[in-house]
Image (cartoon, rainbow, N blue to C red):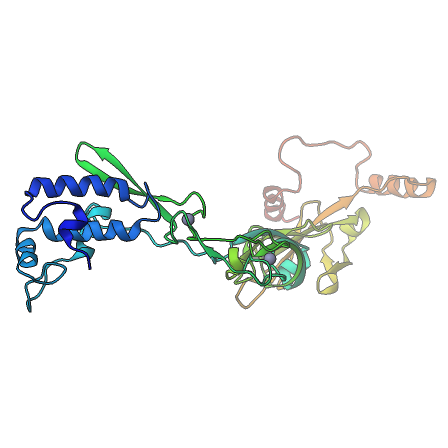
Length: 371
Ligand SMILES: [Zn+2]
Ligand SMILES: [Zn+2]
């Protein structure tokens, strides 16, 4: 072990100021950022200064104590690492950051999942095609060409960061910056895998079959843990989120857990009453139309709505009637309708503006009038 005075290039009776001056000068020229490859010399200079700048340690060192200035047989103070921390971390905590890992968790992905109303209302499966990042099969995520390995970065010596000394009013400050050569990893891929160019993963199209829970709605998200992108360096997959988009159905619309549809019926059926067949998600159902039914009347069929999400029970089906006025009448039909009009005293029909004749209030009036 070399002599601390020699390391700093000062005499044994050098003053504190001389020691400080000598150290500053050497530290500037030997600092790893300024002059890489002289780390050992730099450490030796730092160690020497640590001892010689502390009166107690210097005395112990002069008296033949330990190399770090501890009294013979006694406990040492501080030591090199303390100074090293102080020097680099500025005493404000921190110190040098760890190099970044090349292996990281993959990103979560958000993809639209188009499903039809039946699947949304009653559950089922749906296929979704996604573009994702998959593990590179050539290098298994390593990013290196077969038979090669990453090498330690020569710029940051594997630290992932480089340190820069700047002069400020408060003295010299050391800041850590991401190594420009290795990007903070501390290692360099000299010979990257030709398949993934060193990323460890490749783009891939994947078709996923998803189980859709009954009762999902537009905008609901289904989370598939671990089905997102593979991470850089072959890291674990993120999660896949599927945002449900329910396609429009030609007949039924969704209203919460209820289903709604419009049923167009002939005028005669509306007038006389009838049971009209309606194809529902539960097969054909007979919709009971009462005599005198009007356009806009809604018939509730209990329990034929959508399944409730994560709950027992179903909503209802609401069938709104639309009464169709007959068109393209032949002579006989016209004649029958004229007879009907005469019988109903409607040959010189009048209309009523404002409230619909068959609205809830008019019906109430009819009932009160005993009609
Ligand atoms: Zn690869
Ligand atoms: Zn580096």
